Length: 200
Image (cartoon, rainbow, N blue to C red; front, side, top):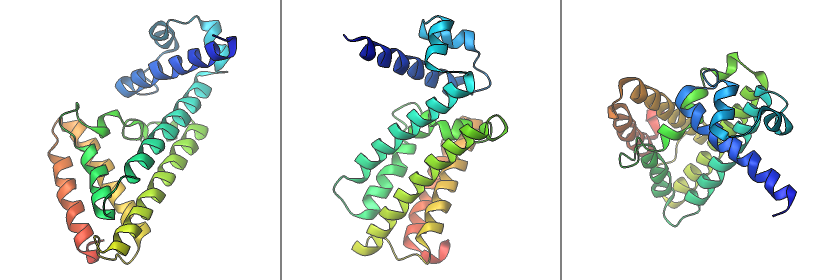
């Protein structure tokens, strides 16, 4: 194994361990010592890859957004109508068979309220990731309108934002109450919104 490959793997390992910690504790709740212990790397190695904890946070979010959008692209590339592909995505948020589904592993759900007060650079990275996610939802809504599976909304961009906001809020309420009822309500509301363009 080359030194470069080993270096890349070590960096990826720190980011992977860090993502798990941040999902459980939030960014501010994770100390550097805990991250180093979990990753089994010395402090000097951490600073070789990341100039600061904030730089680590930026790299963590960039890595997360790239991974998330890649998986979303693969999901939306599957066969099916626009509506089927879109509902497959929302259903993944509710997947009760996997410890709370997609929302339970979402850094946007975990950090959206925390990051804007901690780091402008991290906020911009997270916001850019969300905007790119919404753009993909807009495209699938447009596909559904074209194939007739979604009734044409007045403004696909507004519908996409409304849907994402609905699910983000439902995920937060579900975490707060330790109950997936808000997510199930969001699924029903999504079905209605895609069937009734006046509902937006």
